[in-house]
Amino acid sequence: MIRHRRLVAAFAAACSAALVLGACGSGDSASASNAAQSTVDAGDPVAGGTGRILQMGEPRSLDPAALSNTWAHQPALGNALYGTLMVTANDTLELEYKMATDFSTADGGKTFTLALRPDLAFSDGSPLDAAAVKFNWDRLKDPALGSTTIRQAVQIESTEVVDPTTMRVTMVEPNPQFGQALVAGALNWIASPAALEKGAAAFDENPVGAGPFTLVSWTRQDSIELEKNAGYWDAPKPYLDKLVIRTVADANQRSNAMTTGGADLTTETSWTNINKAEAAGLQYLVASTGGGQFAGMNQRRAPFDDARARRAVSLAVDLDAVNTVVYNGEGEVPKTLFPEDSPYYADIPLSTTDAAEAQRLFDELAAEGKPVSFTFLSYPTSESRVLGEAIQAQLSAFQNVEMKVEVADFPAVTARAGARDFDMLVSSTITQDPDYALTMAFDSQSSGNFMGVNNPELDAALERGRFGQTAEERKAAYDEAQQIIADTVVGLWYVRALPSVTFGKNLHGAQIYTLGSPLPEEFWISN
Image (cartoon, rainbow, N blue to C red; front, side, top):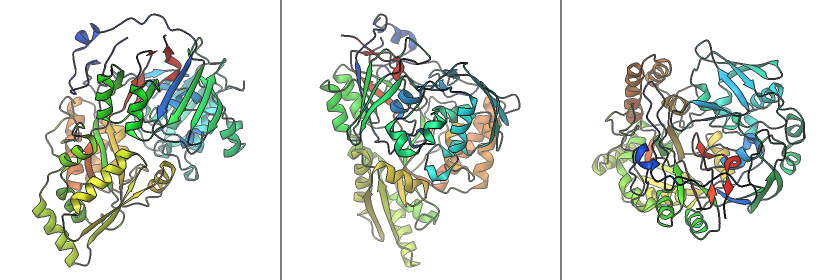
């Protein structure tokens, strides 16, 4: 088993980096050959035992449409109940198939063919076939579901069942990179159509999927208990008999639970907690990314429909000081959209600090009868709340600007983000391959464009990046896109994302795909 390791996912393009495993305490990475010397053979998987898992976001429902497949939400729960059609390899970001056997295009991304393993079955014995996938994918387009995966689903024009194991997918617009988007959301999780049609309450009592585990009980705001699915397609997995998943939004509580042996694995978003885990002799996995998390500004309404207001707030806030308050200086502030080890890196600063110019802009807007006043909508996590308060404290030193902080639970923030009912909130544009993240977040026609960015030149640059035939063509397109994103001021880029898990000495088999999504069927526990 590799201890204290960091997975650095390659940026998929013509250039791809090797998988790097190394120490994370300082943020440095070692070569793969050096890291291999620290590998400890844990032996063959042992069956039995209970895995105690911490997640960061309480689900509003067990419907796949209500779950999010990112490290900060419910990835372990979704993978446990529903399994995966496919995953991404962390070294190349190439698709690897699980319940699916193929997802490919022969026409540049206008149509795809999805092929399934034969004889897949839900936990109630009913078939998981192409018709079931079609039902799940089609319903994700419904805005009434409030699913974050609507961003991916609406890119699909239609689905057609060819035979029980084959589905044809036609896209609204060609997108040869769509597989990267698919695995990052609920399109990857298929539930029983018959169970879903019984309604939300009945489904939450008895969610029917084809994953490695099935529900025993869900005590809201407490724990979700799962047991091994004896009919799981990939026997003898899962190795564990049971999973107990609890939601712990507070970073300190997660760290304490891990270091005192109160949990076996947690999804994580804090470099401070990663460093504490290393000091305690725990293990961890981190997927390297570009972009990051930002306090996004809604350009659809005042005050941030005026570019001067966005620029004034950006100039007023010292993000290194924010990092000190929120992460004790241990976070990485994104100075550029892509890190230096990315083939898409360009020395284009995302922000600068200039208090005098910020005050001039605040005064100019106030003189026009438009003083800058806004509310930061915070998730219930300690990190999000402290971030809002840190920005608020800095802005309090300026005249003609007022900021409030409103804390709401995960479902409420998700719903208001979907309705675009906010001034500022935590959002993210986390790049592995740039296409999915940047187009989803900033293309003017994207349903995932929460900030309301509307720039034809940016749209054109992103399209060139999507269809570029060479590494040089894609690099040139994304250079232009980076400059426009920086000039537009979409928000305050306060930390490089940390899609990660930490886990105890006795838990083995930990793997993550896409944005820090763990695969619980691989877990096993040694004594």
